[in-house]
Image (cartoon, rainbow, N blue to C red; front, side, top):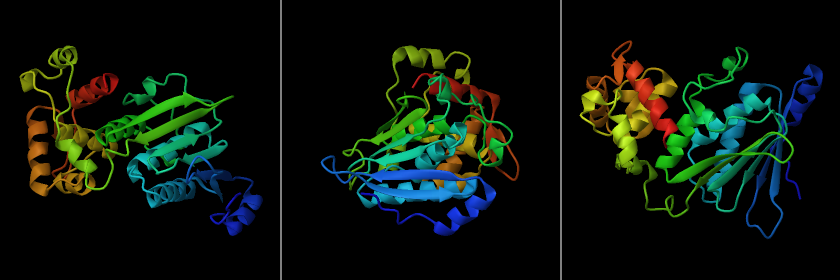
Length: 280
């Protein structure tokens, strides 16, 4: 049974006049013993599609107990521009902590490369709506990993792509603050630790960045520049902690001064993020 309560009839009328439209279906499973509730929407411009679809997916998943962050959902919705928004279906599994986003676009041949900063197929027209610098999927994988979850890219049945976002319900259950995982240092294999110390971490005396410091680097990659206030607001750290971490990262040459007291990634910082993303 379909529920078309999210369909905008006015927009559908306008779309007929312009000849451009983006249809999307959201399938919400309460359990796997019954058919899903289906919400259909149609959009006549890309910005509305990105904003509205991200919000609806976030709201529906959280209404049934999910905890996947809005920023992660939005990045994946934005990524659908590479599929030309063909046959978009978003599936929310029971509990809300597993979301599947599928399309029937050209697909992704180099799935590992898609997770590397700077690897992008975005064209000039796409960059009117997205950053287009290859930071989306790296940020998603970094963020969802810190939230105790995973992201997987799979081929759709005949063509296109299915992206799976999943957070362990135990990790995201009430009483556990997911964002606090950023303060926990990740275990790093000895072989990776040795490689990181060569060329990239010479000034760090073979040290490994904390989870919080990595999140700051990835956020600055997304925003291009950021100061302590932005870091505190976006990541939920205190202002003093944000300032202290920025000073540390700049001292170790992973950040460089930007405009109006902000910091931006240095060449060394970009090199670190590329290496780290490739060795997650």
